[in-house]
Each structure stands twice: as C-alpha cells, then as structure tokens.
Amino acid sequence: MIEAIDLTKTFKLYRTPSDRLLESLLRRPRHRRHTALQDISFAIEPGETLGILGRNGAGKSTLLKLLMGVLLPDSGELRLQGKLTGLLELGTGFDTGLSGLQNIERNGRLLGMTGAEIAERREVIIVFSELGEYIHEPLRTYSSGMAMRLAFSIAIHADPACFLVDEALSVGDAHFQQKCIRRIDAFRKAGGSLIFVSHDLNAIKVLCDRAIVLEQGRVVASGTPEAAVNHYNRIIADLNDDEPMRPALEQSVGYGNLALEIIGAVLQGEDSKSDVVSAGESVTVRLHIAAHRNIDDFTLGILIRDRFGQDVFGTNSHFLQYPLTARADETQVVELRFPMNLAPGKYTLTAAAHSAHNHLQDCYHWCDNLIRFEVAGIQGPFFYGIARLEPSITAQPNALFSARLS
Image (cartoon, rainbow, N blue to C red; front, side):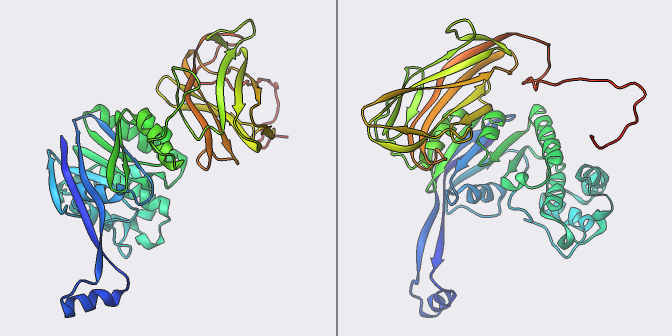
C-alpha cells in the first residue's frame, strides 16, 4: 500500500547562476519560491493502478520523484509498504560511459537489489531487453529505444510492490511496447500496484482503476479514469469549470463555449432508428446543430468507445475533407454514414464541434457519451477480434512464392 498525505514540494528559482552565489555571500534572498506540489494526498491499494494526468509543468514528474525517493518533500508524509521501482525520465540512474551489462549492476543496486539478486536475474533481464550483443556496448552508443528497453527490464525484475511508469515507456518500437504492457498486466494480476503517468488518454482509461488530475501542483480531480480524462480535456481546452454547461442530451456530459451547439443526435441502422445494430450493418449518425453566431469554418466529429472506455474509432469533417459553415440562429443536420464493422458489444458515441482542426484549441461543444448503442449479431462472415477488416482471400495452386506483391 502507498499513502501520500499532504505532500508539498517547493524549489528555489534564481534568475541567473550568479544570484545563487550572491545569495550565499550576502546572506540575502535573491530567489523566488516555486511551489511544484501542494497538499497532494492519495492512497493506492495492492493490485490497484492509479493514473496521473496533467499538463507539462503540472507537477507529475516531481510527484514521481518524491515517490521514488529521488526528492524529499518539504512537508507531508509518504507511507510505503514494500519496494517501489520505476521508469522515470529516460537515462535516470544510468552511466552512459558504462556498458549495458555494467549498468544492470549499477541500476539494480540503485533500485534496492542485492548483489546475489542481480547475479540471479542478470540473464533474464538481458533476454527480456532483447539487446543481444549490444549489452556489452557503452550506453552512449544506445538509441533512446534501446536505453528504454534496458531500463524497463531492470526495473520490472527488481520485485517491486509498486511500479512507477512515466512517459519514457512511449519511446521505442511497438513490439517492445506491447511486450512491456503484457509484463505490466501480469505484474498487476499478481497483486502489484502501478502508478502510470501518460498523455495517452486512451491508455489511462484502459490500464487504470482510478486517476487523478494535477494542475499547478494541486489535485484538481480524482475519480474514475473516464471522469479524470474529461476533466483533463477541459483544462487543455482552457475552459472555466465555473461556467455553466448544457449537455445536448440528458445522458451526455457536455462542455464548450456553445458558439455552436449540438442539440440532437440519433444513430440509425438499415431498418429504423434503434440502439441495437448488427456488426457489418450500414448505419447513419445524424447530428442536429444550432449556431449562435456566424462561423465560416468548423469541424464536426464523432468518437466511438467500447464498454471499457477505450477509443475504437473516430473521424471528423476535416479528415473527410468536407468543409462546414454555420450562420447565426440557423440549424442544420449533418449525417455520417459507415458500416458498423465492430465486434458485438456495448458502445458509446461522443460528438464534438470545434474550430480549426483540433478540439483542444477552441471547443464549441463536446458531448461525451451522446449516444449509447449495442452491436448484437453479425451480418456476413463471422470474425474474431474487435473489428472486421473486410478481408478477401485467393489461392493460386503451384504458384511461385515471392515476398513482394506484384
């Protein structure tokens, strides 16, 4: 178990390096105080995964360094049961002049492993990292992806009770990232706790049990991953929490400046309006929008999520190269048509209207979970997985095989 109680951390900031020297000589302050974290409190139970969201400079990395013992808090208390290891900024704890093999010894000891434990797990760490003969080369010759492989391999094999992961895991190829995710999943199932810091909102929703949002060194939201992601999106969009929000439909969570408003939505299958469609069925999403001022160019988009809150498909009028305009006090209906090539299950559809091509810049109206629907049954050939990719198949008897398609 990990419990943080009112953790606070401040730093002295100097305008120039000489101010630091003058302060020590003259015994007069020449700095200003910056509060990186203030009154941070949370608890993590064994087997639980906590996500941490926040803009750059919100205090995420400082918090992880406090948890790892790299920094000490100015006030507050941190209660830990068991060993913490983690993957912070790439290269933390490494000596680039040493070989990968030597860094296993160095980094392992920094993570609390004994010499006997390092010797016992050295080969497993090397195999997991997939570095091969490069393990004998100096770390300065490694790419960032290779360094991440080694750092993760050492940290996850240090038998932690809790594993801390920063954005460093985003470095490297997709194959090794998937391998890391599988190893983390096995770690969680075995009762390990995980603290996960990422700007990947989808990963936060899929991997985490709870999430907190940091803003200017404070916890401004705490709860389910989906609620935390929604709050984070509002911060990024520079929206004021005190401003009233009017959802398009009662079951939807909405926000935006409402220069343009989504006032109605329906998903319709081939037969009639229904919240149940078949996999492979052609569907139409109809969005009813009202403008409260003239808008020469806006983007309207949709996002489909599965029952776990994972984003499975999204598109918008900009991607589809379909420019949209709106006149004040007028309404219009926008339709999007596509085959519902998703596996049977329950889904939600989110819709958003915004300026330019990024909903984070100037969001007119974001409507979360605007439509709830179910895919039940399959039209056409059966398939496995989360989506049907419309494959075709041919066979050519006695044909010569070539790795290149003609």
